[in-house]
Image: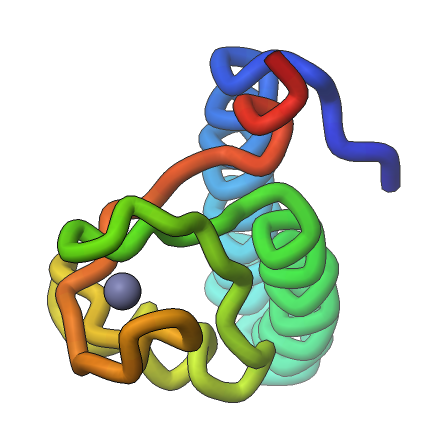
Length: 114
Ligand SMILES: [Zn+2]
């Protein structure tokens, strides 16, 4: 999926996709209750996971972080980012330029173009 040039669009897509995944999962859970079978819920959970991975990839391709100390933007390693996303809002990364562990400011790669 192509990352849009505008930050607003990027955030909107992220939000819409998150809502879609939740609705999708709920629909399958509802089907599970309706047919009193766990199969739809499992199918829903698996497909939701796949969508979540796609969404995470999309996020990774659009995001960058800015070190508050030296103001340099950087893209953390995929594994580091995924690990950090699950730890609160403040995202601690080791800045590649000054080597300090900082709470980096989430930014958008498209912003660098201007
Ligand atoms: Zn730095």
